[in-house]
Image (cartoon, rainbow, N blue to C red; front, side):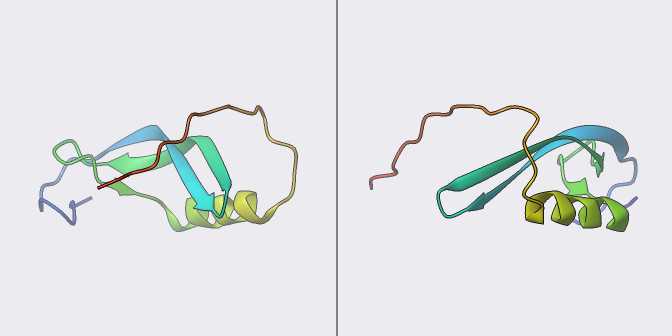
Length: 76
């Protein structure tokens, strides 16, 4: 794979964490396969992986676990 950011070859398959925010809801999906650029960290997901991610987001199933996380407000 050629990285869209740096143009270099040589991405490797890694398991990454993907998060989605919607309103006050935050979804975290762990162990997602992605090609990751060694130089920039840019992630590329296969079409089937993207379809599965969308399915997980839209399903109303019980999560594997629930994580409590602090929230901060950015004040300029």
